[in-house]
Image (tube, rainbow over all chains, first blue to last red):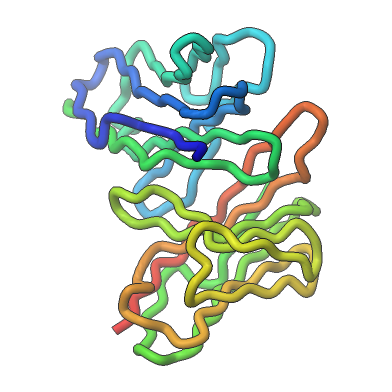
Length: 112
Length: 116
């Protein structure tokens, strides 16, 4: 069955530190890949997406992600975290249907 | 600016009540989705609609039904609410998948439902 794994349930970083959130998918075919962010009590907001082409994609709020086919990964990165980045982050993949499969999320805590 | 709205942010209902959660999108999207979000479980798809009056069961449809009479509106119905349906409910919409692949889903703010 198709699945998405976010191995880190909770990550804590200091403000100004770099960040990498991991995402792996299980299915062999190249999926369409998304990262969403959810602030407390809010819905999900799209950070970035990958469909094809350049494997390094830029998103909003200074985030980027890199698709690595050989590792079935789509990790999210940010060079310098701000306190306002504290939120929950979801990776999602889509194949040849209209539905997306979501990971279980990674909660990011930022210390001043 | 794209917008998905949900009728209530917080809702408290009693066991056995019939509960309606409403979702409206103003983007003329073909697809609409209802998810349930629980800690540690991520988002789980309850139902999906790809057109007016068309629906497809998701991963956890038991205890829920849906209605889509108009393109912009997608309702989730709990026929007889139970305490294990206490959760955050998220509605989303998207364009129909195109030749380039999946389109992103746009989410509403969520409804936190408590069943007592």
